[in-house]
Length: 167
Image 1: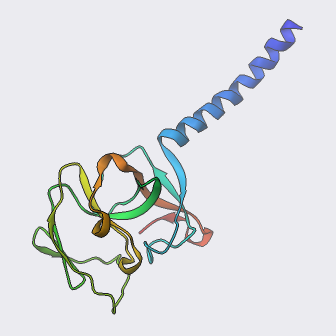
Image 2: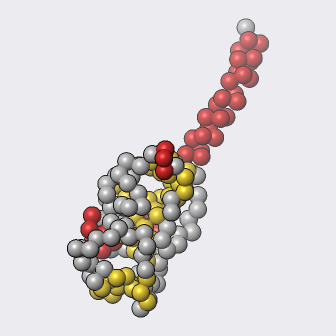
Image 3: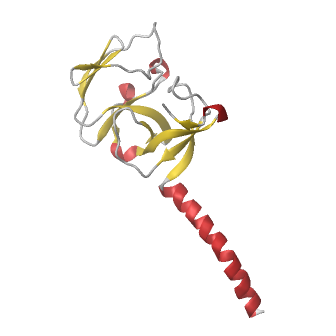
């Protein structure tokens, strides 16, 4: 009886190890996330499934990130880095006094956006959705703290016809 229990235990240990590894990967390295809403159109569409990379915490301008805001997970693009001076004049973004062309931004000819110049504090990031007229972002709630960022997204899992890296 004792030998049978030991034999069964030896056979099941690899399964427990695999389950443990999967749990660790999901907790600390990658996890799936779902796009909720139109704020990142045309880059991301509502209900798309993405992979959140929790491991890399070096955030760059134009990274698409997931962060926590008021107990919600939001997906936006990093526009301003710590120390940057940002201004929006007639839908045109200026960073540190220079015009920045935003090829990813949804074309919204009737939408006019303006924002007076602000300076981003250390450990903060300014984020916006690509669909500016439908995005609740840093223009409304201010720059976000670095420690609220859960990770970056760069891989789409669903829909299957768009599977792969996000442009």
